[in-house]
Figure (cartoon, rainbow over the protein chains, first blue to last red):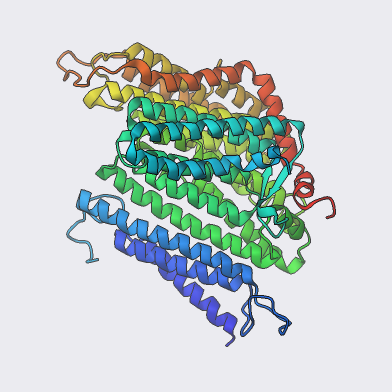
Length: 117
Length: 507
């Protein structure tokens, strides 16, 4: 198995889990789903510069082949933004839970039959 | 570089400086903070007017940030389209700012003014940037500020709608990043002009990925534009937020449409091989469905804010139809319609605000209420705003729809466009007439609860009236405005000029 296959299947698994959780009715699961999705996206962006092992991203005289540094910079930006966004979503869903007494995303009161979060 | 060259960055720099200064000074003294905020609005407006004047010579200008030349650094690009959108954003934000001060909406929570200017920073940046990743960053700035503004004033209902709004947009941002990653993986660049050059040179084996990237990118923009079927977040969000904030948001869906108009002809235009005009077959049905759902929503809405939200949805749908044709004439009509739709949507929200402030416990519900102070003035403003939004003569909506009908005649699919525009206009007329007569004509039963609202000064009619006067001016000078739209569309549909302006004539 190649490295590419490993990374690709990891991204696919993360996306599948992320989509499933993001479609759940309760805010905590949705937040987890968004986190998984953002991990997948970050990994994907990282892989966009091609998977190369043992290469420096910065120019140096001794090396002829380099890793692409730009995706790493993009990932850094994306990580910062998604991290902030996740924190905001957590606070927001907490506030909304405390104000409305329900952690359902659509704002309806939870029914007794719902599975435990 | 002379000072006028650096003016291009003013719409980004000014809000970026004003926002933190307003936050700091507002803590000390409100008057100081207000004057800083007003100064920021005025400076942005002045810069936008100046840039609009500069763009009149039909040249496309690029500004390399930090003098890092394209395609390695980030560039800002000013052409007629971006200059027009900057001007519209600056005018709208100034009017909304005045309304927020007059009605005291900015006192309902902390940090209205800093968030307001960060919102402007994001919008202006998205209009100016010539780099796809930079566009993502400005979209995030715009969204983060909009989360804060949307929740301004708080309340359980607003928080619930806010959670859904934030979640939808985070998923949208994830998709945006995937599309960017695909494009970068294929072309190793994110500069839009450079992308256009390299996409045209891609080999056969990459065409499938390129199509996926183009469709993903358009999906993200369609989500921001609330194109059907990605519109479900909009009505609840816009109806739950403060009307004055929603009025500012009237431009946000159009930022999504702007991003499509900017990227598709440039990157996925005629030279893009198998990916040429890849989103076109999807956008036309989306526009048709958007117009239908929007105007039916106008008909069935139970509140004025909900109705205004559906009117925004309907205008986006109507706008996407001529855009999806991707021809110069249709695009020119779309641009005229877009500018007037922004003002008309904002006017509807501001009139709703002025009305619900006077109706006490009846708020914005479309039910007859006892007579309230200022009923005639509010009714007249509502009438004018509805005429503009639905597209009846004499106001701009009519001119815009006429231009669209004229420009889309004999393009493929024109019977669908004509039938949708004419049919939905009728539905919209019925919807606005029904709610208008309930709100302002009928009087409630004699035993209805009296209104418990305090009498309000009439100053909150100023902002909606200003927008309507602007719309009237756009009608009177429709020839000039349509010529402007034509010139802007001609620039957009000639991507070679954009590429030369950014990368230099060498390529």
